Length: 288
Image 1 (cartoon, rainbow, N blue to C red):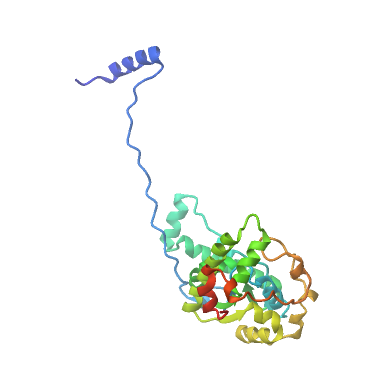
Image 2: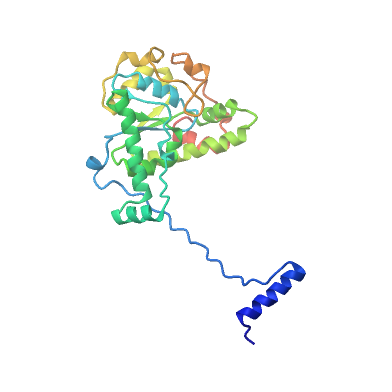
């Protein structure tokens, strides 16, 4: 039997009067389907579509001496090595359907626009410095090295390494309660794994932290040759230059880096002191 709309309304009114409830037809809910993740694309023409030319990225695990390395480089008259930039975390959001439609009609994906933003930000930072070469040493860049090369196909990599056990120990000692040694090994290994993958896929300059603090002039001469600038003795006196504030979250901030002098690293761990989870990397990097 088909009920009329008026009859249904009267029944619902009576039901609601007695019980406080009424009958409502439940309509199927349409669940939006998320679009597939897009694949970042290289610039149409790197020479015309990018402002930066051959930017340098230091790929390293955390606690590998990257802040010391960056202030030594930043002491060069032609090299700008600011604090950690984290540009890969700068994201673009298209907030309306019309803007998404407009960008799609122009052939621009979200990652295309993000790459333009990253390039503009680093280029602006370089212009403000008045120097010629920019170096970004953000450790988490190891996880995005493929995306970096997609954005800047002419990017250059310096692979900064340190004894894997020393890395884990330093990370643990920075906050022993929050970072037990086992967790420190697991956490730092992820950086090492991606760094090793990048080294196996792309040419770059290998640099060991222990060599840098033992022979800073010799190692900086290698780095300068790679970057394309002449070595300057003033690089060794980084304490005489302005590098901005040493702030937690965008680089090392403790007393050792504030001393203004290159200091020797801790003694290398003996082979039997290397945690099992780090031994393969220690072998690959020539430590054991």
